[in-house]
Length: 224
Ligand code: SAH
Image (cartoon, protein in one colour):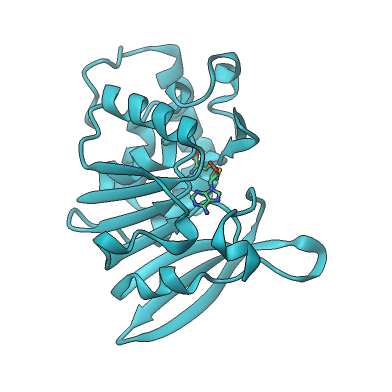
């Protein structure tokens, strides 16, 4: 396994992170070695606010400020695994948040385009990713329910805020053979389901994966 230069062997957080991968990911259904490796490498504790650092490797989401959360490690790994990323993939992420999921994507893809509506979160994520030398990421503050058409098409799209319906601009920005994971809020009981969207020779298919709980997506998609 590759180690980052600034990572001290035997560091307490490194040990917590390896335990997290063994107990929360490998023991469930995360089997893609590249995804497991990225989850072992990226120091999740650098992405949570300092006062929450002890919660970084728990099997749960963590509050990151501005009413937002960093997803549970299992959900990050599982969504990433569904994207089938290769070294050549170009990825669009909607909801940069603290940038943890962004860093995982940056390890596994060629280029990552990430958008966020809260400028302070974009700035914070930009700083942490710079420190970790993730150089293949482009950040922008914009409404992700409209995607980022200037760089489309994308081989993979990952959405980390729950949308009331599938945003058509995102479907339009998928490459052929592209994959998208998105939490969709159902009408009844406010439940959300992680949904895999695939596009094959122009034909778009949806598959419901499992129930999730994400913060709501804001922007254009709300009013339509
Ligand atoms: N992947 C993030 C999850 C953050 S929570 C992480 O690991 O930290 C979801 C994020 O989506 C929030 O930061 C929220 O501000 C953002 N968001 C909500 N609606 C959005 C929209 N329309 N465009 C871009 N980002 C949005």
